[in-house]
Amino acid sequence: MFYRSFLLLVIFFYFSVFAQEQNDDDSDFSPPNGISQSEEDLECSLSKDSELITLLNFKLRKFNPTSKEFESGPPLTDEEIKHKGIRFYSLQLKDERTVKIDIDKFASLGGATLASLLDRSSKILLKHPEKCEFFTLFGDQVLGYYEISFDKILRLYATAVNKQNNIAQEFIRTQIVPSPMSLDMAIKSLYDDYGYQQNIIESLLPQEVRTLFFGENSMVSVADVAESKLLAFSLLGGRITDNSQRELFIFVPYSKKGLLGSNETIVISSTSKIYEVPLLNVPLALNVLRSLGFNAKIIQLKQVYIDESSFCKVGEGGLWYHYKGREKMVGCDFLSNTIKSITSNTLKNSADYPIFKESIDRVYEIMNN
Image (cartoon, rainbow, N blue to C red; front, side):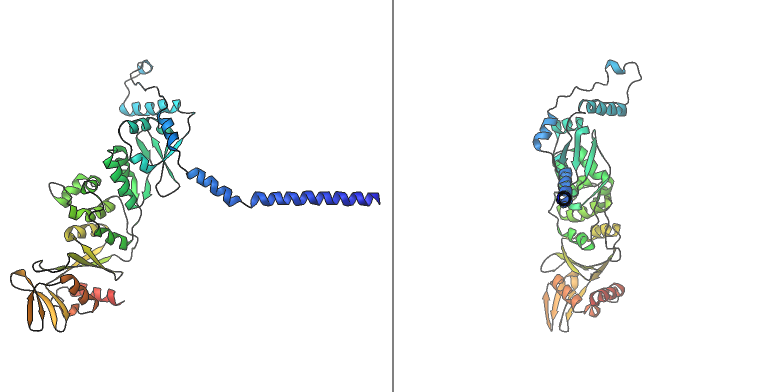
């Protein structure tokens, strides 16, 4: 009897311990996502400002390339001086904590603060603005090539220009590729001439490109900022994602005399969307769009057929007239009437149809699908 009771006690104790171990195992495995997430958050988190200030205030012995240590050998080249200087400061900082800062903060630094940070580059990591990814600094060089959304690139570059941070400017111009842009985003980027100062966009474009597109003075006008932004996107290696939808048709008036209403230009894409782009520099936009792989064509109208009883037409002296029945009035709302003609399928009734037959037929095909 005693033996049986003892055996039951041992079995009870064994299963109690086993159950406890199972509970422990469950507790170990139940929150792995939480643990993993916190580790990831910790890995991606930025350092406190106080940590950056502590690193910047760390007293460094200055590197002297003319010291006795180097007298016995041949004179150091500029590249050797740079590398030895980086290593000299790195050895002094080997026990210091690595500081992670946002690339925005780096772009906003200038003068003595930037110079101090570059001396301490071995302990600096720059966080990607959109990913859990860090850039490594080697002296005044950011290592690697990265992809960032174009809007973010422009904001970073504007900060770097305004703060005269040449290191960040060079990094953005030569080591960053814009994330791919959709066709819709590319056309809509032509709407905004006032999002950035023209000097920011000018600085982002190489001198030879500015001369080619804007003439001898290489100045980007306020009205051409939107087209210039899209040009910068192309030059930085930007791509359009819609590979099968690269057709654009731009409707322009034969003359601007007597035009009424707003000053938008009609652009139709192969997605059948109609865009009304303000203040479009058509020749510049065509060059930029074609550099991005668009098949862009112009349809220049002398007559806009509205309906059976009304139309607009260029008359003597290149002046637009609006005809309604027997009435003839000076002026024409080219934008509204042309869109109405496109959407009501009356483009073929225009006197310009034989000249632009292929393009107009393709527009019909797109709009009727």
